[in-house]
Amino acid sequence: MDAQQCDVAILGGGLSGCLAALALYHKRSDLDVRIVEAGLKFGGNHIWSFFDSDIADENRWLIEPLIHHSWDGYDVIFPEYLRTLDARYNSITSQRLDAVMRKRLPQPALLTGCTIASATSSQVTLENGETIAAKGVIDTRGNGNLDTLDCGWQKFMGQQLRLAKPHGLKRPVVMDAAVEQVDGYRFVYCLPFGPNDVFIEDTYYSETPDLDTQMLATRISAYAAGRGWDVVSVERSETGVLPVVTGGNFEKYWASSGPDMAKAGARAGLFHPLTSYSLPDAVRFAAYIADQDDVSGKALAAVSHDYAKRQWKRAGYYRLLTKMLFHAAEPERRYIILQRFYTLPEKLIKRFYAGRSSMLDRLRVLAGKPPVRISRAIAALLKR
Image (tube, rainbow, N blue to C red; front, side, top):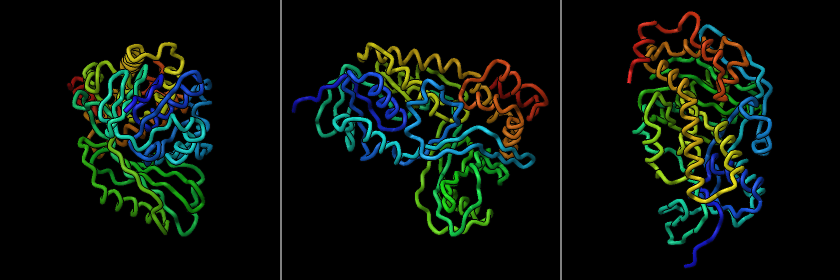
C-alpha cells in the first residue's frame, strides 16, 4: 500500500493539535498538513474556557472563530469573600472546534477514525497498516510519563443541565468555594449557556488521581438543588484528571514520549503547573510553530523542545505555589490561599492565569499576612 505524503503530520486532534493545524494552514498555505485523530470528531468531549487577557492581540485571529459563548465578567465565591471581576470570559466547545476544523481545513487534511500504531519524526503508521510519510511530525497526544514529575491532581466532572426554570445567573461563577471542602481544595464552576441551560463542574485538588464519578454526579445534583434549580435533563457530561505539578525532571518527561519527536500541548509539558490550564500555551505555541521555516522532523523536534524547556523554566514560580498549596495547608483549609489571592488587583490575577506574572506580581502574591503557617510554608518549600 503506497504511503500518503505530506509536509507536516499532527498526531492527535485535541485542542493543541487542532490549533497547530489551523495556524499552519492559515500562515503556511504552501504546506500540505494532515491531522490524525483516533476519534470520529475533533476535540473529544470538552469545554475549554479562557479570559480575553490570556490571548495576545496578535494571536486573537486563531482563537476567535472557536468561541461558542462570551460573558462580560465573572464571579468568585468563598466562605468569607465574594467578588465580581470585569475580565471578559469565553468558552469553546468541542462541537464548535470540530465544525471550525471541517470548515477551515481541506477534507484530505482531516484524518479521523485513524488509530496510530507507531510514529517517528518523519513517518506515521496506522493500525490498519497505512503509512503517512511526512517531512515533520508533531505529537500532541496527551501527557507523557507523569511518573517523571511530582504531581498532585485536579479532578472534575462537568454536566450540562437543562432546567425547568431560568437559573438567573448573569455571568459565570468561575470558582464557588463556599461548598464543603473534601479531599483537598474543592470548588464548583458554573457557565450559563442559556436561560435554562447551565454547565456545572465539580472540581477538587487532590493527592490521588482516582475519580469517583458517582460521587461527583451526586454532588452536582445536590449543588443544583441547593441553588433551587429543578433539573429536567443532563444534556452532556465530561470528566477529567489533570496533573498539577510541584516539581520533576523536564528532560526525563520530554524523553518519555520520544526524545526525537516534536511535541505540543500536555505532551510537551505546556500547561500551567497550578491550574492545569493549557489553552494560552496552546495558542502561543501554535502561532510560534507556524512561523518556522524549516518543518523537517529534526528541526521541529529541536524548536519544540527548546520552546517547552524555556516555558518549564519560566513556570518555576507556579510550581512553587503549587507545592505550597499541597504541602503547606491542611486540605480543608486550602481555600484560604485562593480566597486571599482573589483579593489582589485584577490585573495581577489576569497575568497569573495567562502565566505571565511580573516580578512585582510574584512578590505581591507571597507578601503580606501569609494564609498558611510559616513553619508549614518553609517545610513545603524544602520538600522534594
